[in-house]
Image (tube, rainbow, N blue to C red; front, side):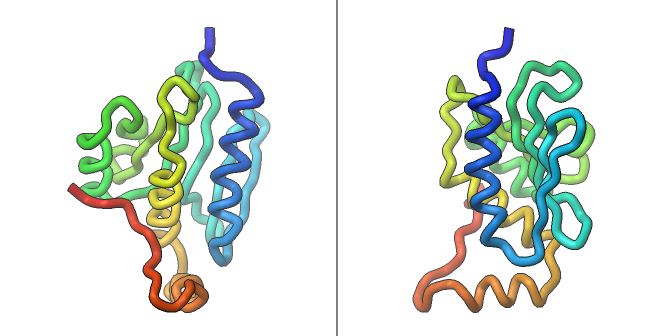
Length: 143
């Protein structure tokens, strides 16, 4: 039995979609299996996967560099794990169900960092230029 339901999937799509929606040159797509992919220039940088291959998880997989992936998972292995199949490329995964108490602020940072790895320099520059003066964009802490 799953520890989450359709309302949890909708909430995850809403929260992650809001983050992605403010990033330039992004699109979202729900596939026939109920997975939500987030793309820039046709490249996937994040994915919400409800019960992927019957794993029982409601999870976010996100592009990351290998060092960040290792640091994130080591810092909080109850919330984060190495994404199956994609982990060898640096992708990090996060549990999104209430039982794992997702840190939505940290997930926002992880998604933005994943986008930066795939986005064009022009898109990143436009995003950074639109940030409020005196602020910095958030990035996941390493280490």
